[in-house]
Length: 438
Image 1 (spheres, rainbow, N blue to C red):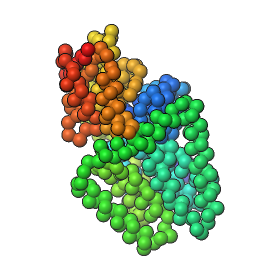
Image 2 (image 1 turned 45 degrees about the vertical axis):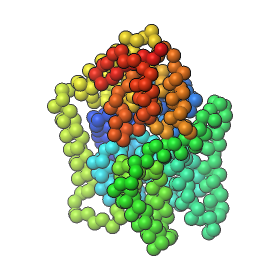
Image 3 (image 1 turned 90 degrees about the horizontal axis):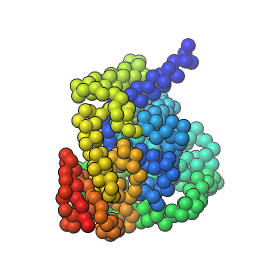
Image 4 (image 1 turned 120 degrees about the vertical axis):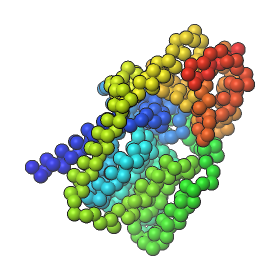
C-alpha cells in the first residue's frame, strides 16, 4: 500500500493542475506560446514564416501531441500539468518534504506556471540540479544544457557556465558536456540550413536581442534595486562557499530577468533563490504533503467557484479554446471582433493588436509576422522593418486597439503611428478601430 500512495499523490496533483490551468485567466504569453506550437504543427517554418525571438525546442516538443489529438489549448494544458507534476517530483528529490513549500508558493504565484518557455527552462534547471547531485553522466548533462540553449538561448548559455567549475580540476568533464550540448545544437543548425531560415534566425534571435533589450527595458525601479542586492548576495555566498555548485546555478538563472527587469521575471528568479534557504526552514510537526495538497485543492475549488459568479459556460464555443474558462463577455467579444474577418473577407485584414494571435487562432486563419509586432520581435532595427512592411501593403484593412499601446505595453507603437497618419477610419467594433489605406 505504501508504494501506491506516492503515485496517487502525483495523479491527484496532475488532475488538480489540469483543472487549475484551464480556470485561471487567459494570458497573452500563454496564447503566443500556444500559437508557436500551432504554427509548427501546421508546417510553418519558425523565423521564416512567423517571428519569434527564442530558440524553438519548447514549441517543437509541445506541438508533437497535436499530431495525435489535434491543435487545442487543452492538449497544451495537459502537457503543462504533467510538467508541473514532474517539477514537484524533482523538487522532492532535491529538497525532501520542503518541496511542498515550494510547490505551494508556485501555485499561489500562478502566473509563474503558465505554459511558457520560461517555465520549461526552469524545469530543465531542476533536471540539471538533480543530475549534478547524482553525479550523472556528463554527456547527458551536456545534452540537457543543449536543450536549455535551444529553449531560450540567453538563459541556456548562462546555465552552461556553472560547468566551468570543473574546468581546471576535471577538464574532461567539461569536454564531455560540451560534446553533449553540441549534439542537439548541431541538429538544430542542420535544420536551419535545410529550412533556409538561418539568416532570419540570426537576425531575430541574435541581432534582434539588441533591439529587444533596448526597447523593453523598463528603466530604473525598485525591482532593479532588489535585483542588484540579490546578485551581490549571491556573489557573497559564492565567495563564502565556492564549492557549492547550486550557488552558481542560481546565479546563472538571474538571466531570466534580463533585459526586461520587470516584476514577473524577477519573481521567477526570486523563487529559484529560495533553493538556497529552503533546507534551513524547519516545519512544525504536521503532515506537510497532506497540508499542501489540501491547500492546492482548496485553491483550485475556490478558483472554479469564483468563475460561477460570472455565469458558467463550459465548455465554450471558442475554437481551440473550448476548455479554457472564459466569461460570457469574453466569448461575446470574441464573436463580435471575429466578424471583422467576414465583413472584409474580400480584402486583406491585418490585426495590429497584441491579441492578433488569439483572433487568428480562433478563426483558423494563417499566422504571419504582422500578428506579433512586439518591440524587439522583428529583428535588428525592427521598427524600421515593420514600418516599411506596412507601407508595402496595398489596399488592406488595418485593425488597431489603442489599449495595446498604452503604458508599458510591448506592442511597437510605429504601427499605431503609421495607421493614424496614413489611414482613414471606416468602422469600429468595441475597442477595435478599423482603417483602410489605399
